[in-house]
Length: 344
Ligand code: F0G
Image: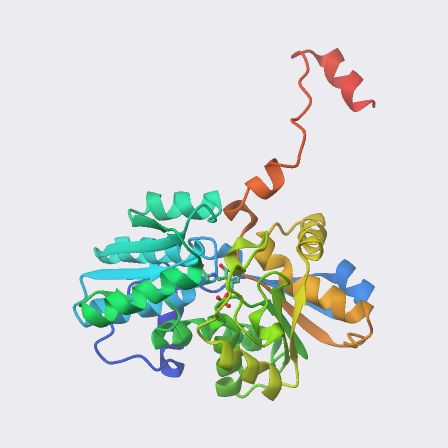
């Protein structure tokens, strides 16, 4: 049978109401890429779950197919979300597919160009807020309490249901859960989903390493951060909606939530690209966390099976790369000039 998206494949494991009408872009089914060379450096068996290969370029499509399918089934006409960019693009795409109006609130000037372009291309009404993601989330919660507009942020329980399918896929492919699962943490919906998914699927439980950016690390500091700052704009969040559940996942799994610097994140992004996997900065946080933990001796990777979740594609945030490179060499269109420049 051809692949028809993750609700079709995993419906029996997803707590979705009977009125759900499936809206799908054949999301999910993303590759689990073996990383033998990098794995050797840690002495472990290493895989990347490349969520950047979902239809709109991030893992958000897993939760969005579920949230939009439920919203359509109950007759919603308009959906809204607050977003650092990826949720916006995903909501816009699935709303377009379903014929719904989509409104997205983003923090002023802090959304990567590939995400903003996506949201606009899919036809969302994009509104910038003079404030942070957290301020935008407060506003969309209020408006959805007072109007029939449907909320599609990960406070929406169906988002969590959809996102549980990534741990299902990992278990199906490996035969069991890995020893460690490393992933970035922003609003904390994804870590919550992974932990719920692994528990439900009963194919073993990983330790979870959740990774925040140093300038936006409320779960590490133990208090909200008023003005979160990080180059990894996807996780520039100071007051995670599912913070408690994230801490629980780390605690119950005998894992942890740590913070890494922007330099460590960019370093991990370069390492991944050198292995042929280009991810946006936030998506490199999982590897940055693994590097930090193993190099200070607080995580023993030796002989373990480890999965790093890379949540979004590098093409989401091209400026991070293009702002720091020098333009490609320009040569005359002659064979000799080519030989001269490549020196062979
Ligand atoms: N990685 C990427 C690429 C993201 O876009 C996000 C969140 C995360 C990780 C963190 O996931 O919030 O479930 O802990 N992006 C949201 C958005 C906030 O609006 O697109 P989380």
